[in-house]
Image (cartoon, rainbow, N blue to C red; front, side, top):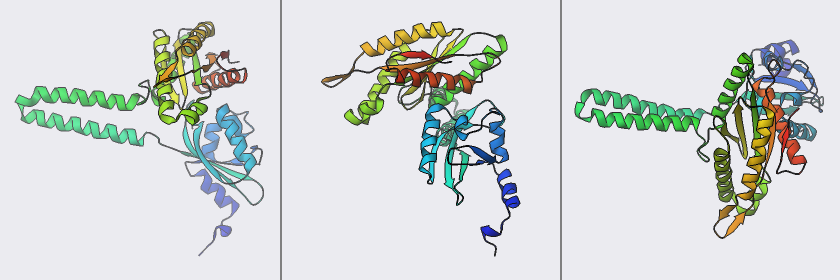
Length: 321
């Protein structure tokens, strides 16, 4: 019977290099010391990254710095660079302190679509059942066809639509953004995005409760949907954040749109029973740079610009560097 202390350093390195989770050893400031093959595959997109924080969006990086300073065990869910692609994906993160004042960082892939896929799978099984029944009953064939179409439509909605705002969900808007980036890169066409965040949304939840917060999210979603022009698309990125895609548009067009949306949302009060709630948003804008940007770096620049707009007083927009 052997204990973990009997395993050599070489054995541990070999073990870490054969697991799918990204593992890295960092110091208390997040500086990278060593890492396994899975971590290295993601880091290849950012070869100049010297610190763990460099691989995260600003909002996630700030949270990571805080956790590193605390120095204890912690775990959370966020975005991280994936292997062999320009994409990022949701990961389950762990920080585990060692006896020599170092910290082990682990990023394990998290499949957040399990519940959705289960629902879609059940709906698709219903479709197969309807097909079998229609073969044995011509009299009911037409009715079953109508039911099949309804089920397929329901499955599409579950897979692609945010159930609260009825906008494209995170998975769909990111996929659409990746397609637009590919098109802009290939044809050297214009493409710009805006990241929209509801100002002081936490205060709304704290003061009025989460049901009112949900109503504010729906209200802002409607204003954004009705305030953009075809072929622009808006989707819910998560929480109180939205993403607007502007194909064939530059940052000046996005700025004009942002000014219009800020005014529209500012003036459209949210009416809850006998009271009105004032809502504002902050926007960050980034124009795609062919030959330089991936979809992730484009999103990061827009996200940083949105935080800058908030630091400048909120209810405004900023263009990312």
